[in-house]
Image (cartoon, rainbow, N blue to C red; front, side, top):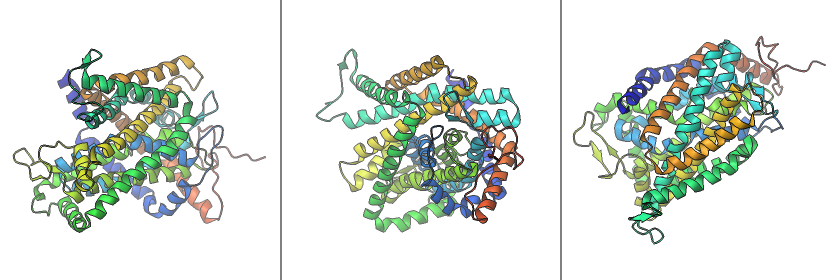
Length: 498
């Protein structure tokens, strides 16, 4: 079974998907005339403006909801893995993927806005399943995406994130006066497992209190917690860099030299730097995977392109700020290891015996602020992982709503909520290896289905961009009329002509 799961995972997440994501980002950048550069001031302006309604959340809340899904344990562990396997140069290629991915995020998020609907409760719903059916007319294709999303986001990946929370909490607690050596039996379970089970139950209770309140409560929680958690992490990275200011020029030199195979120690890793930088960029910012459009569709805006701009900025925030903070935290302190291609002695060993992952970041903080490393990184992991679980639930619920024909059916929603709460508890103290692999298969399938779809369906998003820019140039606050723009099969974008 392990071999079968591994083979399927390797096939889905092969270099073909990496090339597809990178190529789509470059293509959309050209097609939008690099809106991620031209439109940066507009992204910033729209991010802090906008209003909510009974049907939808504000642009900022939708941004926070999408960031809660994008910013997860991969922003710490994934970046560390990229450095360990691809060398410091992988960070440059992660930036490239973030830059190109911003245009991909614009396309998919604008499509989600154009083809969004109102469910039986009067709330906006949308995402790849909706625009695949409405714009392509392929119900089976849309249902395949919806089922893959419900399985991956609703039942597989939440346990992985919960396991990371519980494991990091156990690492901090072990050996402290509160937990002692954490050996022997607690309540009939190995002490560490019992502790992790307790953490899982606590996380599940907190999650239940939020998701049973619906999308509005999720949005309200996200808009407060996401800026706080990301801001605190970025501030810590800046602090560490200031305290290691003399090493910062060398850090940038290593990144750029390694990115093009020019560094003396890491020159042979050029191919791995590109592969792992792009791969981690895709994993971290999720541009093209079809996750961000779910939150984007929930926003109350007068023009679909507005939320497209905001979600393009989400990629910058995730990659250029949060992921980069992890990279700078690690590289500025030299607390990382780099594996030799093909095995053998490590090319660089700044933290002997420490495996890639949160341990690099913990060692980096400890090196300048002794006693803070484990606790701070564990706290960051908690917020990153918890908000990601919350976002997973919203994605799963939206696709369940799609399969239910956007009708109000309380029982399936209740079962989904109970299921995700149960998976959080179970995943917290069980081995997450299989869940990771199966979840990756689900997310990878989402990415294949969505990228192919948006490459086919890009035209309405490009029309919306052109219309938005024309109205802005005329000095108007853009308002969208799908019929006038020649876009059919939408239900919410008809301008009142009375």
